[in-house]
Image (tube, rainbow, N blue to C red; front, side, top):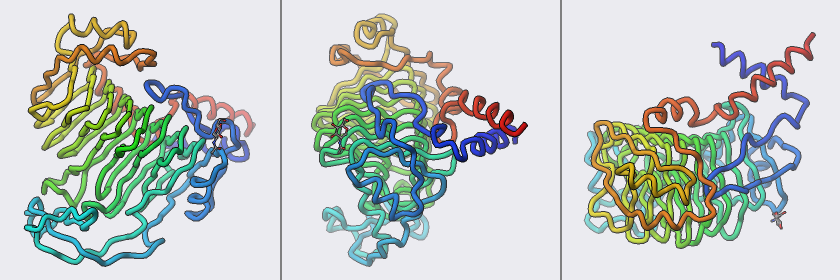
Amino acid sequence: MHSFIISLLAISSCTGSAAAVGVVGSPVGFAAGTTGGGSATPQYPADIAQLTAWLTDNVPRVIVLDKTFDYVGSEGTVTGAGCRPSSNTCPGHGGQDAINANNWCDASYPKISVTYDKAATQGINVGSNKSIIGEGRKGVIRGKGLRIANGARNVIVQNIHITYLNPRYIWGGDAITLAGTDLVWVDHVKISHIGRQYFVSGYAPSNRVTISNSEFDGITKWSASCDGRHYWGMLLLGSSDRITLAGNYMHHMSGRSPKVGGNTLLHAVNNLFADNTGHAFDILAGGQVVAEGNVFENVRTTLMEPVQGRVFTSLSAAMNAGCKPYLDHDCAKNLLQNSGNFNGDATAILAKFSDYDSPPALSDTAVKDSVLANAGVGKTGRRRPWRRVRTAHHSKI
Ligand SMILES: *[C@@H]1O[C@H](CO)[C@@H](O)[C@H](O)[C@H]1NC(C)=O
C-alpha cells in the first residue's frame, strides 16, 4: 500500500513536467555509453500506429509508454501449416504446438492446422537513437516484440513489459531480437508469455549489449516441457557479440537460459536463476562465458555437458583473483542451491575483457535479495521517486 501511494504521487508530480521523465541511470558493462534518444523531449504515443511510427523512423526519440499497447489482432490472424512436436505429450496436448516456420517441423511430427496472431511473428523494427521507457508499471507492449537489426544502433529499452506473443506456439514470436546492431541496453524489462525466444541475438553481429535488472518470467500454460515452464529463454548466436547480463531474474524456465554460441563473449554477473527444470547454460563452440556471483536455486542442469565453448565459473579464490586486471574486481563465486554442477576453468578468456566497464559483483549471499528487489518493471531509480514526492507535496501547499 505504501509504495502504491508513493508511485501515484510520483506520477502525478510528473504531469505537465516532461523533464522529469526519462531514462534512469546509465548502462554498465559492454553497452556502456549507450545514450538512446538522449535529450530528446519525451513523447507519449497515442496508439500502436504512433508507437510503431516513432520506433521505426530515423528521428532520435524518447518514447514513453503510459499504458498497454496491444498489437494482438492488428495484423489479423493466419491459419497455416503446423505440427505437434514430440515434446507435446502434455495432457490433452496442452503444451506448445509449432508453426512450421523455417520448415522446423520434423517429418515424424503429426501435421496440424494452426491459427495464430500475425503481429507477433515479426518484431517492430526499431531505428537508431531511441529510448523506449515505461512509466511506473504501466508501459506494456502486448502481442509484438522489438527487433533491433540491420544497422540500427544506440537503443535503450527500459522499464517496459513485453508479453503475449502467441505463447501457445513455438515460432509464435520473439520478444527482443538483435541482428546487426551495436550499443543496445535492455534494463528493468519484463518478458512473459512468448511463443519462441525471450531474447535472441541472431547471426549478424550485435556488438555491444547490456541486459540488466530484467525479469524473464517463464510461467506458462503452454509449456514445451509440459511443466508450466518456458523452454525458449535466451539464444545468443551472434558472429561478433559482447554481452553483459547483470542483475537479471530468470525464473520458471526449462531450457536455453542462456544458450550461447556463435562468437559471443558473455559476462554473467549477479543474476538469479531460479526454478529451472531443464538447463540454464548451454555453451556451444564459440561461446565464451565468464559467470561470477550468480545464484542458482533449483536449477536442474546448471551447465549442459559436454561444454563445446569455454566457461569460467569462479571456482576458487585463486582463480577469482585473476579477474582483477580485467574486471577491476576479484570475481565472486557462484552460489548453487539445489542445483547442478557449474564447473569451468577457462581463465584465458578473462584477457578478452580489456577496456571493459564491469558492473561490481555483489557477494553471492547478497545477490538474491538484490535481484528480487530490483529486477523487473516499476523498480527503476528507487531514490528518484522520493524526490518527486517532495516536489508534489510542496507544489500542493
Ligand atoms: C544517431 O545519432 C548519431 C550521433 O548523434 C548520429 O551520427 C546518427 O546519424 C544518428 N542516426 C540516426 C538514424 O539518426
